[in-house]
Structures are given as structure tokens and as C-alpha cells.
Length: 129
Image (cartoon, one colour):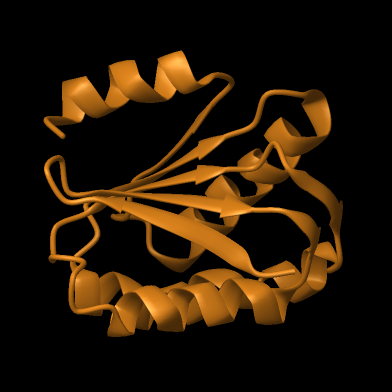
């Protein structure tokens, strides 16, 4: 399934909402779509809401490719940080795995993991978005 996204141009925040069965190809397609979306200004905060993902169709080994594929997207849109929202244990656990993978790929890129939308909004305010 694709990754739907909404762009809040007032706050320069992109809300990614993957759903259903999520594959590496779906994630990479999302990266490319946003990178090519001229309405999305550089300096965005990326918020990834995982609650509607039913199945993650990749292994932890395949997931190693995600941060590398995120690099071009990150450079083209000058992403400030990524915030993963994982309410339940499985979504939170996968978000923590992503956080660890991103830190291995680029120790200077900031990835946060929170449990609720409220936590994400508080964090966005602290970051200045």
C-alpha cells in the first residue's frame, strides 16, 4: 500500500501516514514523491504516523536500506528531523528500530519516537515547528 502524506505549509510539517501492508518499495516511493513535490519547502519536520500499518513486509535486514534511501529525500528537502508516532507496542518497537537504523547511518540526523499525537505536537513546539 502507498504512504499517504499531508503537508502543513503553515508549519512546514509533513505528516506521513502509511497504511495496510507496508513494503520497502512503498517507503521509497513516498520518499521520491515528497522529494519531487515542489509545494513542500525545505526545512520540513517529518512526522510518520504508524498506527494504520497492519503488516511490515520487510525484515530487519531489508530495513537497513531505508536510511540510505532516505538520504536523498533528506538532502533535497533539508529535513530538520523525523518523529515516529507508534501507539501500540509493535508500532513503537518498529519505530525504535528505525531510530536505531537512522543513527547508524547518520549519527547527526535526529529521529524521535513518541507514543501519541499529543507527544508529537509537544515535541514539534519544542523544535520550533
